[in-house]
Amino acid sequence: MQMLLHKQKKNPHSSKGNRLLITVNVLGSAGPLRFLVNEDELVAAVIDTTLKSYAREGRLPVLGSDLNNFRLYSANAGTDALSHWETIGSRGGRNFVLFKKPQRQLEATKGNIIARKGSSRWKAWLHRSLNLKISSH
Image 1 (cartoon, rainbow, N blue to C red):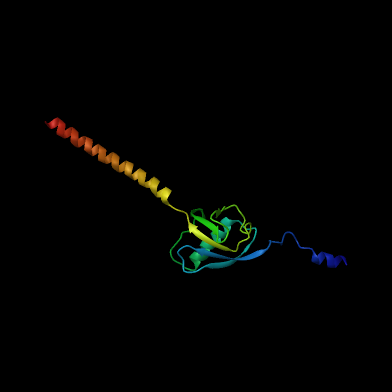
Image 2: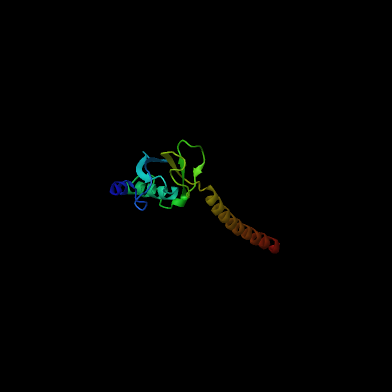
């Protein structure tokens, strides 16, 4: 009888939780990616696996591999992105959409730096030109 009970107990070290078949649609890609994950796996790990699978399959457009540039949304759980530190099974969904984060803020910051550099060069040139014209009269 003890042997039967021992066999029925699950070993906590080998238990990985429930496995889920998830579908991740990548914005701009032809079709979804499907793979198995543990329900207690972090969203960051799922994004990483998605990006690696996407690249391995040679899909277009090329996305890159920095998981911090992406947000994962549950397809049927509202408009909030899942936190990278949240578990994939926390919202109960199995269908997800992967978006690249908007680069507008980064581009705007770069644009402002370039504009300031360009405008300071332009202003310096204008001041030199005006000083030359004024002093030559």
